[in-house]
Length: 173
Image 1 (cartoon, rainbow, N blue to C red):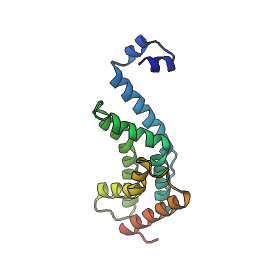
Image 2 (cartoon, rainbow, N blue to C red):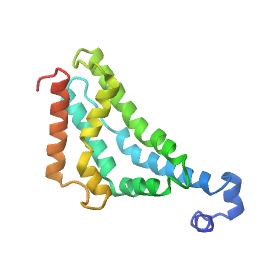
Image 3 (cartoon, rainbow, N blue to C red):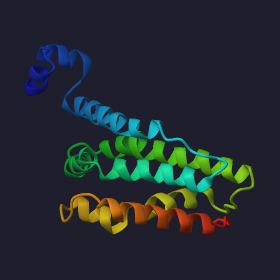
Image 4 (cartoon, helix red, strand yellow):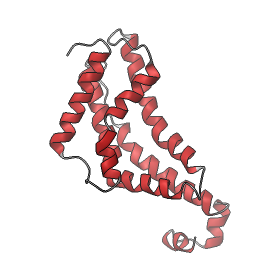
């Protein structure tokens, strides 16, 4: 608390006026970081007339977000502190994973409503698309076995995920 008060620059009593304790302050810091990282998705332009371009834009923003060093550090921190702050799992899901998943749901629902895609299980489909972009490379990055994605592999991964997803939902590329 002292270090945060010094960095802020405010007094410790001022911090305690705003936060009940370390857990609440830590949660606010995490929520702020999630918001900052998710701001990268705000500018994504999803094309309804061109689902290849739309899904590619979402995929690029998502991959850039999850492989960003700040995201990696945040994820590692959440895992390390989960036992001390059990509510962090809910917080990170609510402020991180849910908005991304909601963006996918809105976009895919619109494509389905326009008859562009045939999606039997919207919930499973949106998760499947995002999961295709993570997998082993993301785990290797989290574990420090590799540093992000090489640009060539990133583009191949995105193209492959978009192609498989669209073909699986009745869209011919």
